[in-house]
Length: 92
Image 1 (cartoon, rainbow, N blue to C red):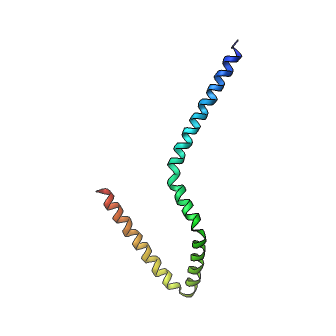
Image 2 (image 1 turned 30 degrees about the vertical axis):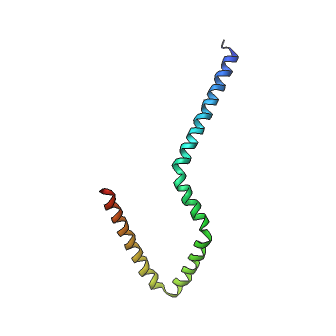
């Protein structure tokens, strides 16, 4: 029959090791997601400006629907050009 004190000590040792492992994994997770967390916090801080800007843009688009199509095409073209430049510079 196993000794109850040894069994309890072993269980306590396992629990302590699991706590240490969880603490280490938490630090690694926090480090890995810190970039996304900073971006999310920045987005939340800009929320009221984004809401106001989107409202103004919606009002503008009601009056000038063809302009938004033109600017959307330009923006997509610029984003494509930037992506091409980045991929070209990273491959060097």
